[in-house]
Length: 257
Ligand code: CAA
Image (cartoon, rainbow, N blue to C red; front, side):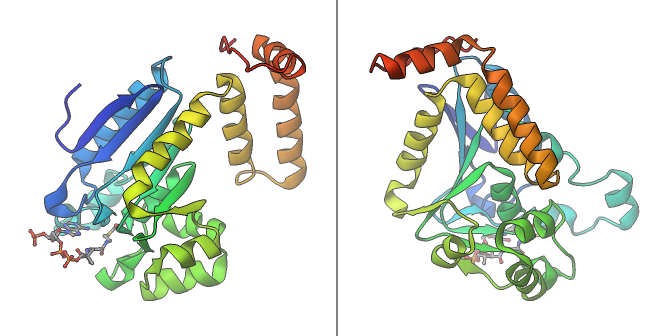
């Protein structure tokens, strides 16, 4: 499949997607959205692929939704077409997706990173929700996901002032899983993704689903949901294999069943 705004390559069981609109600092326009959705659907369906990495350039993961595409739109266009609703499909990707962020992750760029399952940040990364400076607001889930990730105080400050935070502050606040030297970001992310892709596939899907449930349910429901999925994994051949492999002191060989 050839795309104009993203590059997609398979590195073993890892799908590496690189946002590729350098002239616009990877601003997310409708074409990026439709190409990304197509790539993620293909990734999710491909049994040889276990984990994806989304990255940008050294300068920008993505500098936001495309301001030039939105500039002339009115309320009827935005509301009538439910602008940005297409991004919901991205969050329905069942296999894990890691955001590898270097440089700017602003507005929709920060929101896309937060739609991924976790963020690995280069030491050069800068996160922000500067939409307020354009007299608008986050629109791709940023106010909700940022508040859940870093708490009300910092999310409110970032959304109301547009202040950017650097990688160190993002890590302290719990927005990113880990900081990596910029030169090693993509290799580290691909290696991390390969580790995940090397796990039993059904356990991976279940683990992603249950962590996500923590943001959609109350504690008792979430714990029950986790327990039911845990029980269900005992119906898989890979659970027998995984526990036998531990006892026999050898690596597990997964069937995905
Ligand atoms: N949309 C469209 N084009 C963008 C863009 C965006 N979000 N961000 C950068 N660009 C374009 C610039 O217009 C410029 O294009 P031209 O060369 O044709 O003028 C090119 O990318 C390079 O950008 P700069 O010259 O501005 O680069 P810089 O290094 O001086 O500054 C920056 C970098 C601080 C990131 C600056 O580009 C910037 O502030 N960008 C906008 C950030 C922003 O406001 N993001 C939020 C967008 S709204 C949104 O995302 C809504 C939502 O909730 C989903």
